[in-house]
Image (tube, rainbow, N blue to C red; front, side, top):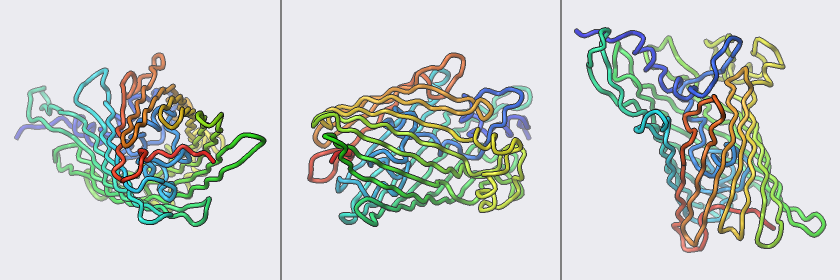
Length: 378
C-alpha cells in the first residue's frame, strides 16, 4: 500500500485554517487565535467587503442574515436574492474561490426569512507519496447551508436568529481522516432610528450578533475536536442625508472570537469557552483587547442608484497583523443591482483576496421596484 506523507495529511486536516491565515504574519510573540472553518468569518458579499468587512449595523440587504439576522426585520423588498463570487489566492492559483447565494422573503410587514448557501472550493490538490510520486487527485471543499429569521419588536428594534449546517471535507479519507460536520446558531439584535438635527435628516443604527455558536468539529477522531469560529460582532452605522439625492454612511464594527486564546484550555465545553474567552489571554486584559478586530467603512449613495465605498480592516500585530484598505462600488437599476469590491495590496502583507475583484449580483423578485438594499433616510 502506498504511503502518504504524514505532513501532507496534517496539512490537509488543517488546510482550511492554514489558507485563511496565509495573510497573517508569523513571528516570535504572535498569539493568533485559530479555529476550524475560519472561512465562516470572511465577508461573502462585495458590499461589506468594500467597507472593510463592516456589516452588523448597516442597512438591510439580501445578505443581511450573514452579518446580523435581526436586520431581516427591516428589509423592505418582499422577495429578493443575490449571488456573490470571490476569487481566492488568485495571484497564486486560479481554481480556488468562495461562492455565496442568498435569498430573503418577507413573512409579514415586520418579519422576514432568509436562506443561503456558502461554498468554498479549495481547488484540485495532487496527493503524493513520500517519494513525491503522484497518488491521487482530490478537490477539498467546504459548504454551509444557513437559515435566518428576523422580527421587529417595535418601530425601531428587532431580534433575529439563524441556524447553520457546516460541512468541511479536506483530506479525502486518507489515514482514517473524515469530513467534518457540525451545526451552529446565530442570535442578533438591531436598532434603527431616524433623527432630525437642525435642517438635516439622519439615521442611527446599532447592531450586535453572536454567530457560529455550535458543536466542535473533528476530522480524525472524537478525542481531537476544534472549535467553530464563534464570533461576537458589535457595531454602529450613522447615515447623514446630505440632500434629497445624496447620503453618506459611516459604519464601525468590532469583532472578537469567543474561543480559547492561544495557550488556554482547549478541552473545555463550548459554553465555558464563550464565557472564559473574555479573560483567558496569557497577557491579561491588554491582550484580550488585542483580540478585537476593527472594521470601518464609508458608503456614499447618489439617488439610491450609485454607491461608492471605502473601508479599512485592522487586526493587532500580535494577533495576525492583518490591516488593509478596501474599495467598492455599486449600481442599482429597477430590479437589478451589482456591487464590486477590491482589496488594495498592503506592502509585504499578503492576503488571499489581494488584487482581486469581487462582485455580488442583486435581484428583486417581487413586484415593487428596488433591489433589496435599503438606504436609510427619513
